[in-house]
Length: 110
Image 1 (cartoon, rainbow, N blue to C red):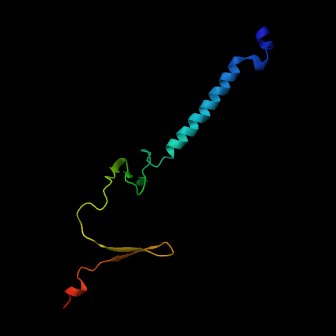
Image 2: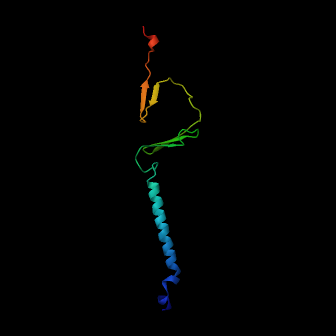
Image 3: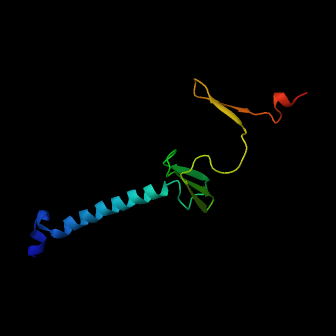
């Protein structure tokens, strides 16, 4: 029964058990990080993520329920068709004010 008299420090199985415990903790931490990801497919929330905001390689990811849409910026600014809708002003306190343009100009009134 020499096996029962051995020191715990000399037993190689004990060190591998400690490594398994460390890996289990790491796996649990990674699973928690994945579950808290806003683009997680199992969450029912609607989420919009903007990557590289304001840069030519900007990307917008929109998640609505289980559907994920990915939009990439073309890098072109001010392209497309449309009409000017108004002017936005940023105030000193950081708030934004939008002033819509009227459909008729003052010169058009008679």
